[in-house]
Length: 140
Image (cartoon, rainbow, N blue to C red; front, top):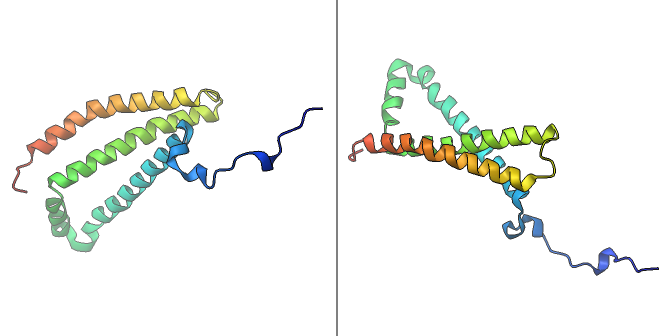
């Protein structure tokens, strides 16, 4: 009878699962999905705060809030939101398909498909953000 390898004889990594060096594509997909979801949630909270400036300051408060947000920094923030929404949405479709049983054994191919589709959409969409960024005067 062959000796079965016991758990005590196997090498053990201390907290290796938390070290990004050991992440596989499924874990990177999970981490990026969570980061993009948190970024979208933070944006939503900031957006609600911004819109409620009408309640806090009336029409003048809203107008001054919008005037203060007409800067290049906010275009960069909108571009980052675009990145998060694009990846999060396409990866969410992949996760729905996984829940339906499609591609269960092809995680790596699914992740790279999401990555390539997101990269194409981001490359095309970024053109509009760059044009908008360049349209602002440099003095602001």
